[in-house]
Image 1 (spheres, one colour):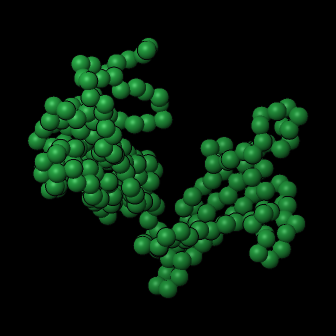
Image 2 (tube, one colour):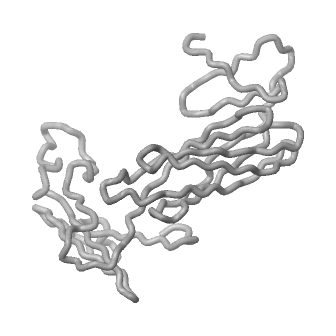
Image 3 (cartoon, rainbow, N blue to C red):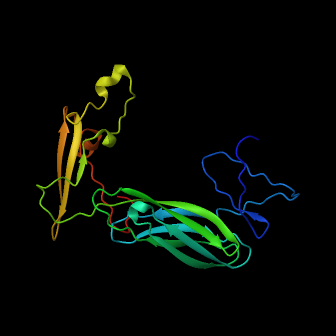
Length: 236
């Protein structure tokens, strides 16, 4: 075999804990005449919510006690510098080999409108026998909708190349189908709220408007699609 050979953590002297990813890897066991048994997933991210600045963001983890005896599993985490390097720690009691879901909450501070719209918390899991897993918990930072006039700057300005998803390859023969600039396709969006309503305004630039469909089929042509999900709702 070729490649790096990093050691994997061993708990209770007989149990190995190793990360599983899309990268092919092998577990090499030396000096043992026993066929190993796969016990299951030690830790995995189940669900995380959009993070609203100023409101603790929740993440649900699936955690398995890697020990064959009851143990305390401690989850310690840290947010990156852009969000104040906040740290936290929480402990959970597990029975021997017990697996269950646990919830952690992360304080996402409001860092201004220019702050990154995504962040990743690193969660380290350990027992008294030592560390056994590290998880990456990604968060999308939500934009709070303020009460304001729609004549101000847009809430979202989607007129750049980074906001365009091209369905065509960069082939010279199909160049006319590729995005040519803001006048070709772009949109600005304003959001505000009142006591009773969510108010949306869109300003779309499109050099050719193509909408041959009608009624419930207009989503197949040039149109605006809006998905709304309230807390606790599954799907849109």
